[in-house]
Length: 388
Image 1 (cartoon, one colour):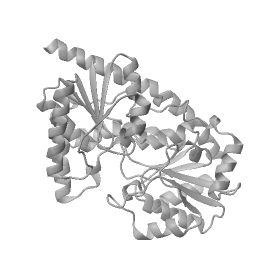
Image 2: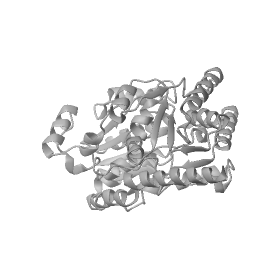
Image 3: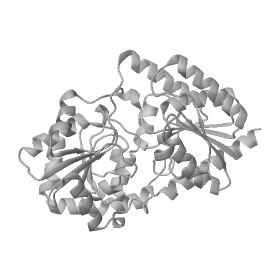
Image 4: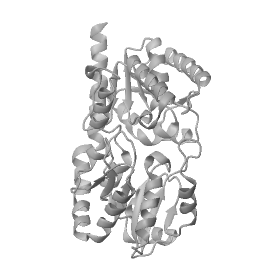
């Protein structure tokens, strides 16, 4: 069995699918990787032992570049002759699924980890709807990584129910709970990092991990934190992730506040986010849309309760009042009140924290997800052989 995995950018291969290619190889599958060029490729090749084929993929809508990417992907598929093409992320999905269908690949799988079109309007929304439908029509199977996302896709009538499936309990890659483990970090380690970041011993730390963009709710988060900071001292907001100036940038007021407010600490992108979870008290994740967010899984595995918005994916990981709190989307006051509630109600916070890690271990452990994906590869390739 030969598998071609395609993502739009290499950081998705490195982060979102970490460890999965090696697991498939250990179970007898020949794996080929492809994505756009990027600085992460040497590290991916080192850790997987595989060459990453580069394709002219971009995250923007660019018809000429996309046609070029389609041709290069088609040529790669004809050269490698995979039994399965499995795509992840929107642009890799449309290019990879179309190319695979044109090349006659019998098993064409696409994982949906979010729908950017949900925040698009007017003509752009129509284009994205068309692209999504074409991706699904070109695939033999489509895998939303959460049940909420599956419901949205089916409600939009993008594909029939019998072509759509959630693997395991959701998630694209599961969570390595032995790696995301709070016991790996000593008090000395945590104190050293807090000192480095200017966080005092008695400071209460809210953390956000991810891209610092509008649709992750960063504008609302910064505003809620500022309002809370007017009455609550000794609090910090720790932002771990890169800014994106081209796609969905933050408001100017938010950017100014992040740069000037001494209680907001922005550390940029980090290869290893675990130490930052280890020194924090609460994950604040007020995103507008998700598939099944890895960050919420990671925080839970690290023993942190989460404040999340009531969106698909997040509300499948978090049960309100059990391992976190759920608030309405784009509601600054609700976010501020939830943040205040967890700093003032220590008993509630401790109860939520005690449930955070066990719930992730029982439902989203990585090996469970990997085995379910492997079983699906075997099932579909066997079915394709029978049809021949």
